[in-house]
Image (tube, rainbow, N blue to C red; front, side, top):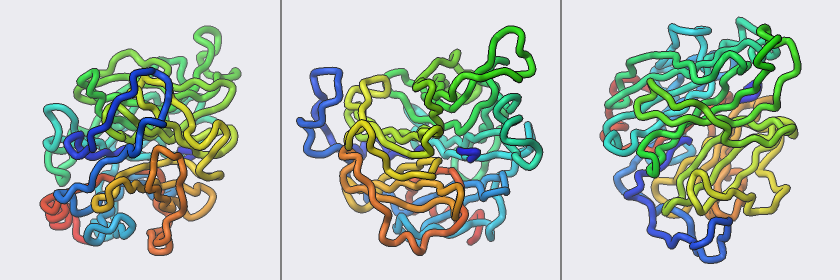
Length: 349
């Protein structure tokens, strides 16, 4: 979200891996860090906003082709917010975890309608809340709420995303914020902190634990975190260096709070002048993953792919020419045949 997944397969579809006995990142013992293909998944559901249109738009793949998204609802928004700024950016669709796995989904997003403000004001006195909608079938989205997660020293809350944290038995929710002096600067007119990634845990996306720092690389500004589960407590994460305008990846083999390192080198990046990384596994090819990168100064999302996520090496997808234009920071969820039928019936293409 510059001025701009999370999606994972069920842990049941993750290949078994050995866990290293040391806390630091060491991939030498791993031949693969990848889920197997899942025959129950036969399509992909994408949620995005479109440039200057801050609503949630749904897209569905043509069959089981990860690079064939077409708009649902005749290209009209599926969700338009009625609270806050009346605009939502960076929507992320979150599959239920724990007891909610396969039974619940959430869409969360940034409360920001840039047509009603400026980029400077949106970072000084912007919304400190996260939009939330929920569903038990992917077709009925209810319970719209705007949950405040930061205190009055924060200038904004941007690009929220979440992943099921099995160790905690809760969802780990994260976002980007900058902060102003706690006294003497109620209008946030002074110099802020660098933008950092914050996190909290929640069981229901209603009540959140007090937020804490997750990634603070001051004076570098860091935004747009996305996490992808690799199995056996290993994860890949994708984030934007907002100071350098680059997106890069890191790997942890020790969990969400383990040691993280760039597998391709400390200075390695995936691409420049991009943001909003959104990663998801291929339904059919074991070990293959897709990564959407938002070319915010151009035509929006373009797809990248990797056959070896742990290597940190990604390349532009060969089929990128058929990818729809102007999709902005969102996410993609692998879905079953029944779910494909349900959303297609509810919102015809």
